[in-house]
Length: 537
Image: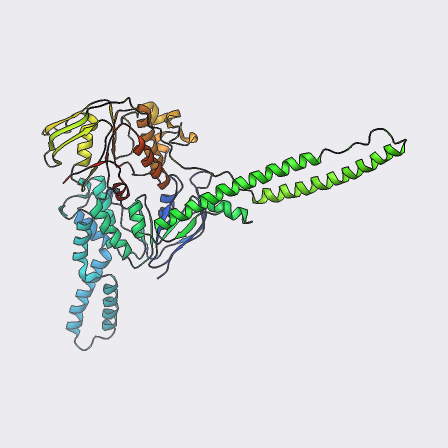
């Protein structure tokens, strides 16, 4: 089967290229995960693979890529779930219908089948390749595996939540007749069970798989290689070896764990190389400066001693000139292989430490919302860190919304929930006008210096809507840090963030002395959580 192929691909939205000199091949049974800092072009690269975008330069080849229509498109939302999936599986359903009609035609023709039999055999082969015989079972399995098994397929797609639409679209892609699988952040809005199902499906996919994800556990399970769009450390090492050509992407073979080791080594080598080169440059500059100090002949030679001084001065001048020339050549040679100072994409979130407190910070007594949240009783002491887990629909977001608003989310809510001290909630969704800290000024003119440490300075005064999803998430975190709450409630904190930012965010939260309530599906975070846990059923 042909591979997914990028050859010398470049793409830009503005005058500055976003992607440049991308060379990438994904063969059968390969599952390649694209990673990189927020705004580095991961989603753009995948949109080039699906044909939504066309490269400015170079070529993109993807076998049999004709993915399903977006579940949130106007056409899709106007139909039912069943109708949407029927449209996705139209090729298979049409082939089954033709096969049935052809079987009837052959039966009526008797022995005079001729070319009809050949067409029948060809269609049979095609149906087998499409796994048409078990299509109903595969549809049911995909919906159930992605947490939609109990949803009435007669419902309009427009009635589904954004998360449900995203899962429906993934189900459609798994059922489509495409040979290549291209997915952008597929585990967003998936609980642990659905994520495990998707992992199994992708591992067993027969064709090439190209995806992006911030889900570290998922990447570790699925990926056979990681392609990093942050090529700085490897570009530096290549430059030092005499290869100054642009490196659009760097491929690391193996699992995510292997990638972490390889990148850590590359970054360490980059830092050491930069330090050695700078020390070498300083030594050469000092040596050249010393070489400029030469003897002077003084007055015209009238005595033998003065003539001797002039001889040695002239010789010193010649030696000095030769040394300067040699130093200039060495500096020029160094400049051709000199690497830039290592960049850092670390999220340096500076959470304001609250004043020391004792006593109860959060107290819930049989707090429940019919149909959305089963009764919850929990006490959280000041300074405690609590992780809330549970399947989609178990009420995690409902519980955190109650905490953040300090009021029951619906009129039919029962029980009680109280929060002591100032509280701030970071919702699961990206920032919207009217969210805490997101007033008209911030929305249109940017976050300003409150983004210090969380956002690159060039983005401080950029409208929120113009930022990438990951940088919008950083804005939310920076605003929360600037507000200095005593109780911080965060719904799915790892959504949208790049991998480096995830590590630094978790480090910042881990050491914060305030009261922290986190809801998450992130299996990596769950596995490495440092505080108390509350599981909702």
